[in-house]
Length: 175
Image (cartoon, rainbow, N blue to C red; front, side, top):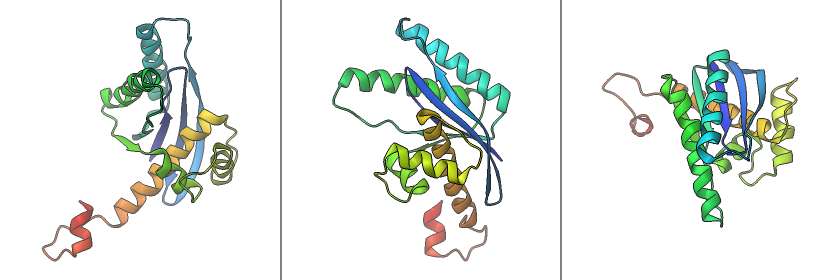
């Protein structure tokens, strides 16, 4: 299965592509969609969409994992990030690619083991889990989102309810 992780931003959206085979993860590619900040908001969103569309076409992922936005003190910045996040969610969904969302704390906990890990810790663990991955901060964060989804998707598959009548209480909650 091929996954793309996305770390939304209006100036820089990190992306990372990994292949998952059983419990093995392999780094495919990563980078940043950098947007010209001098353009209008609409032009920047169009540029972000076009950049993501090109990545989705090139790498043909089976699923996309997106980091949820956190609310900061500046309402205008939060709103703009939310708009960019909408474009990041739309690009794969528009192509029929399933999109999964994960909080920043869950991503960090899944990759590092602590929900309040520093960015440097996340980048270090990404390099350990994906040998050969050399990623700047935004791309490392996107790879971490993809790793998080790979782990959670594998767990969901392992505990997926059977189709019989004799489901345990734990199995029925998983749906």
